[in-house]
Each structure stands twice: as C-alpha cells, then as structure tokens.
Image (cartoon, rainbow, N blue to C red; front, side, top):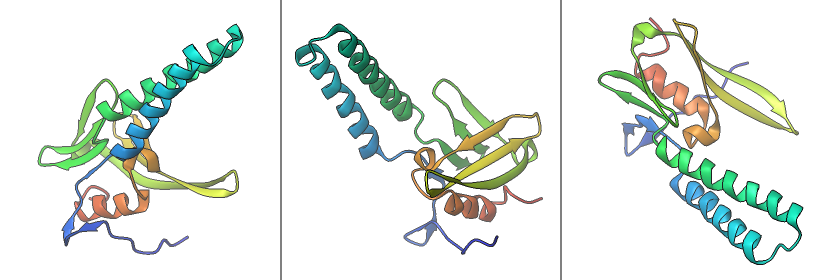
Length: 150
C-alpha cells in the first residue's frame, strides 16, 4: 500500500525532534490532580476511593513520565536519540537495521506505529502520542536525514 507523501516542514526547515504535545501532557496531569482531589473530597465508599485514587496516581505518573521523556525522538549530530522514562539511547546509522511503519485497524480506526529495529535486537515502537504527530511524517523526515536506507 502506497502512502501519500507527507513532509513535516516548519518554515521550510525539516523538523528534527518529536515528542508528546506539552498541552496534552499538562491536561493529563491536571485531570490526575482533579481526580485525586475528588477521591479525597467527593468519593465516600472505600472501593471507589481506591479505584479513583489508583486512576489519579496513574494519570499523574504517566504525565510526569511523558514530560520527562520529551523529546521522545530526535535527530542529532551524534545519531538518532531515543528518550525513555529512565534512559536515553543514541542510535547511529550502523545501529539501525530497519525503520518501518506498522498499520492496523483498532476499534474502527487506522492506527500507525513507527518501529525502529536495531542490530542488537531491540525494537523501539513509537505511537502518535509519543511522536506528537503522524508517524509517516516522522518516517519521511528520517528518510531525508539518511536513517532508513544505506
């Protein structure tokens, strides 16, 4: 299946870093804080407090981890930098075996993932949330930077 050519251009300059939208991360954190406040003040039954409290902690931890891992993927002079919640990996051109888009249907819509397969057997999977945009545009930018073909 051929994809339409999509270019991630910002003022005629190729984008070189991708990460979650800061406003979306802030919204998640705010939702977690509001749920925590609601857990303490509104919910009166113990099982409900546990469930709402766990959801609030989960949202806050996810927001903090997403903020810490920004930018998730970046093209630098040292190589392709992938940031996780706890570590940062630098992948040179020789460390990358294959970069591809995986597409499948989920709950009635098409979902695309950017997969980076490394020589040492690691597989990095990045979603639209992780990249802050369309994975095809990121693949196009990585192709233009010389990371997808030798």
